[in-house]
Amino acid sequence: MKKISSGKVREIYEVDEDKLLLVVSDRISAFDYILPSLVPNKGKILNQISKFWFDYIKDIIPNHVISTDIKDFPAEFQTKKFEGRSMLVKKLKMIPVECIVRGYITGSGWKNYQKDGTVCGITLPEGLQESEKLPEPIFTPTTKASEGHDENISFDEVCNLIGKDLAEELRSKTIEIYQKCADYALTKGVIIADTKFEFGIDENGKLVIGDEVLTPDSSRFWPASDYQVGRGQKSFDKQYIRDWIKSTGYDPESGTPIPDDVIHTTAQKYVEAYELLTGKKF
Image (cartoon, rainbow, N blue to C red; front, top):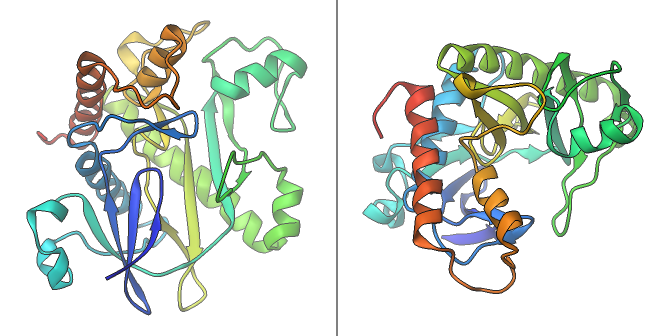
């Protein structure tokens, strides 16, 4: 199989002219660097959480999944190495916009709001506190950079890039998916603070969701039981490892292995998120 991409976490292989095989590794990235230590089973958890959500939102939008069953994969991939962490998918013409939706004010959004009361150019009500729920979810797209950082862009810039009709469809689908999944997650004790989606166009010109959906790598998950407005939150995602890097001054470029206890705690957070959201044991 021809490997056509090796991202921070995913390997993409071309199966034929209309199918790809996505393989999710156990790599973890932070601050745009791939860290030197693997997180055991992380790829399997990400893959299976995505599958769960793709099924959950199929009434809102079709997805690119053909199969996650190894028996349906090309012969080369029918091995233990790929089991549980791979998806056979339809090739899409990907839209060059990361569709970010924020339901709570945190992270870079909180920093910007403190400066001038806006997030990505959207003016928000005065007097919001850190981690507070927004009156309604906001759509804050970014460019999809092949290298370096993604850049925030306004909705008007999205319209200029891909056309007004498609931009409006992206915005409405992004918010609708987020709302449905955030409401569900809350019943399981998980707050989805924000997330990002990627969409493409299929062979019939229809909008389809692809890549990953509502994983701990693409979202901020907070335990609802510990949620408190006015401070940063504990999380079920890779924020834990980001916070560890910040607090210790660890250099992500150094190549120094991350301590086993930090990796173990990170792995546990991924498992916990999976089990809470899906109701299944990992």
